[in-house]
Image 1: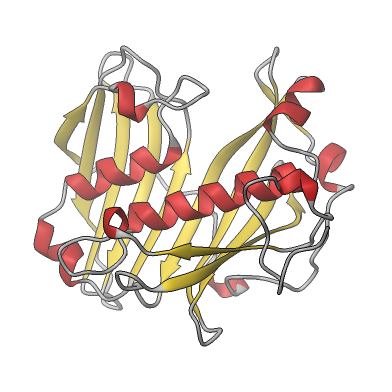
Image 2 (image 1 turned 90 degrees about the horizontal axis):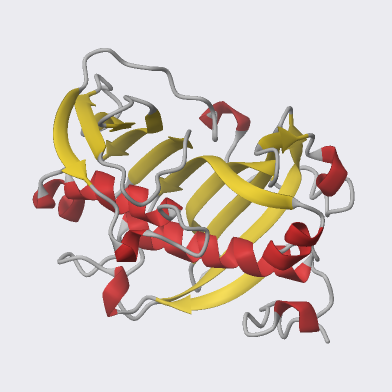
Length: 268
């Protein structure tokens, strides 16, 4: 069975023919917006997460498939650029596709496309393929060589430097402290990647996020956060004349000082 009009069935990804690019329609519902009536950044990450999971299942490299070979996907880096925030009740198409690999990172791209076919959100991510038992990254070729190459199909231009490593900053100050709760933890028993985005959003003034028309978030997921840990969230402004507001963030384990994540958020 093929996708209908290019749109794939998320209810059973393995029941359809393998596709190079996953496409799925989403309705912007009430839980995905803020007081501006527009989609939140964490909802963007939520949509992308669901599309990536479905496409991995469709390609035969989903959670259970990988576990059978002692492997797992781990999201390591992601850059999301929001050119327009979709509005409440708007229907959008979420697209996601793999795009070869770079060093240890398997690359996956994303877009949110409006009814006119215009990409309003674009993203690039870097994933690690990890040996579950040894908890060490493997060469991505062992999986990526059997997946669609999608050469030249880039969501972000090379000059955007998407899914790059973020530098450590020494001027950060603690602005919040979080201890993982039930709703933060996912199937893998660690804090879900979307929750990191919500933690970052929660440190800022409401009006900054509500008024922003465009956004860019770059995040490096560096160490997992599990139940019982207490995470210090640190922040400092970034000087960037090209945007209205810019901030750097870091999450650290309060006891060990181990860095859990680094992020940079730009709003304009």
